[in-house]
Image (cartoon, rainbow, N blue to C red):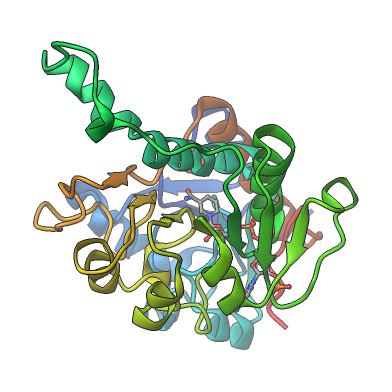
Length: 324
Ligand code: NAP
């Protein structure tokens, strides 16, 4: 019998139980190239590995050229914007990801940004924490109702629809959405309406981006788009930072009429200390925590591990990103 063990490179932390599943079947190297003490091991492993698993790592053509035996990459994420799709396609390398298991948690996070920005939750909680709550707060610190406001969702896939359910069915918010085609979601019938992108920007009180980062969506929110938004509207980004032109967003807040912005993602992460977004009084920044709960990160790690085991065994993974 031939030895089926293959060489696997784990380039981000995996929970011990999932690491053990891989080690049972394959020879595993754990090396995170972001850690200076592990970079050499990462570089040394590339020429021999057949499988890779991890997240938040740019895997471009140059890196792929250093991994000539690679058969499958398993991303512990739903977004695949870190991977060079044409290079993977050309080499017929399977790309797996983790759609579905993080949908509800990410929608919760995005709704938390909607609540935080509308009701000024972080600012007001800090008022108490800092000992500045010395009397009844006045209208200079009042928030903005969420219920009844129109939510515009750009990108109406798994997370966009989960966000729409929260908004329409839980908070009585009329929902407009835009994606490249209308989607039939029976539970949202009569609640969420397909709308052209410009019209969505013009009519929504709160605009939330839940799009994948692609060549089409990179920089999509620019000066024209922010100018179309209603005076006093709120902007939320729960997808990828590069979809938004950040300097334009700052202008929309400071020179334009944007009320507030809630951001889970940024063009550069971690957000540089020098970024004006970090301390802007009307911006709520989360440190990319869309899926960051114990339960969901465990579910993502399990799915990604199963994906890699299946792909390396020549079987269809639970979720392969379509490369055709
Ligand atoms: P999904 O189910 O694939 O949904 C993506 C939606 O965007 C679909 O409705 C798609 O519909 C639409 N779309 C794609 N390209 C478009 C374009 N050019 N113009 C208009 N609509 C477009 O993905 P998902 O699971 O909801 O995740 C969405 C994104 O959220 C991920 O790609 C990821 O980057 C991000 N995310 C962030 C976090 C976080 O931690 N903050 C966590 C999870 C995911 P059509 O193809 O029909 O247009």
